[in-house]
Length: 262
Image (cartoon, rainbow, N blue to C red):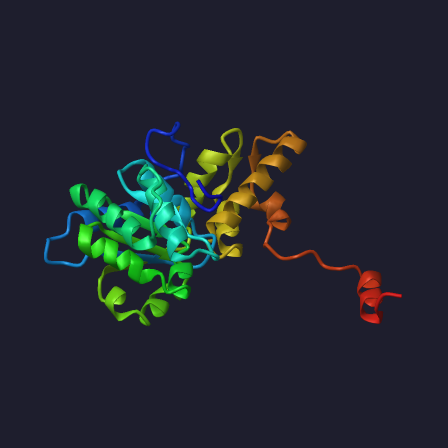
């Protein structure tokens, strides 16, 4: 298994608790829609959005609760790396052959059981022009495909017409809401109560970024422990919200940096 391939097949360990966020639910619905589509419809989906919105978490959760195949793509991947990762996820024995024969072996296996294939960091596939490898496997096996990527993934796919016109559902990851933040707090702040006004402020300041909200929840838990508090509210902790900005440099350090090192 390569460092860039996550084995998340069901049965490989206990499920880690995941907050029932809206994006988790929507991603599961996307995969279900592709699996249950009419046979005359294309079977691709795209799930895009800014980083930190929980796209990967949603994909892994769906994979663990279904029979889908999940592959996290790397920036240095080639066609050979891609098909080897797929074979690993399908628990196929390695074979000494070229890419074409490996692709045929994958198609043969998936034709009997067309499992959904989820490709995270799919921007790398587009950049490397590897999307046609996925298209061939999907077309000949009938397996649905979900591509997960950054905000401009849909526009990048337009350069590959035969892939772009196979997308049945375009879905954008949504910003976290107060309801999502409360679900995250129930999961990650079980020993304290975070008031709704503070959670709403965290959502606003972080612009609904799931990762940054989780960081702030952990920050509130640690501060509450230090202070011996069981509840935190906006009035007391508003200035403690992490905005994700780098620390300001002290005036003396900035002046020395401007003057250059001796």
